[in-house]
Amino acid sequence: MYEDLKKRFNEEGFVVVRDLLEPSEIEFYREVVKEAIKERKQLDERNLEDKSEYEQSFVQCQNLWEDNLQIRKLTFDQRICKMASELIGAKSIRLWHDQALVKESGGRETDPHHDQPYWPIKETNTITAWIPLCNVDESNGQLGFYPGSHKLKDQKFINIFSGKVDDKDFQEATSLEKNQIRYQTLKEGDVSFHHGLTFHRAKPNLTDKDRVVHTAIFFEDGSTRG
Image (cartoon, rainbow, N blue to C red; front, top):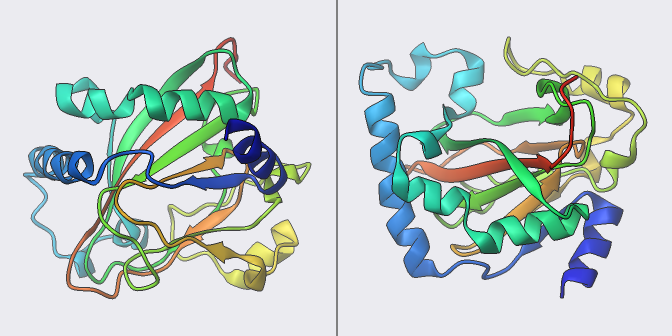
């Protein structure tokens, strides 16, 4: 199984592993993560429309593993960590950080970008585990990837923090066309993995429920700060 998934990951820069976790586990972690977010954001009483465009894409809570022992078990779950290490061909991996990404009801799209330029890690053998804590489809913030985009030579810092990224500017910077993107439909228990250099984006949440996702970013042991 690992060899087939690794081949696809090497070719496309992403792969979905079906049923890696049990639905009952996801149901449990969903409530734990939601409670952790509520605690972190208890002083933020803003409505969605009052937030910046970046914040309208998702509520972000980093390093929850440091606060919550149950979330720590999810972040360091050996099924997830083993899969991540196998996919990038690393004997051992380390955690950069975990985070909850909640696309609120009515939340806007996540602009196209790749992650590596945001991290001060010199080497690029990095991977993100994207763990949906609910079913994810075209209606509630579906994640999509540009296949093979991790093979592009140059890292591109796409500033998704200051406002909406113009599709024309993104295409000129990366030579990637919007119609190349491949969106993923995920159910509870599925885990999506993508390379730190794989360009991706997510659709808006058009439903009346929040889309709750937990992610963990790993890098190969021995990597250096850069």
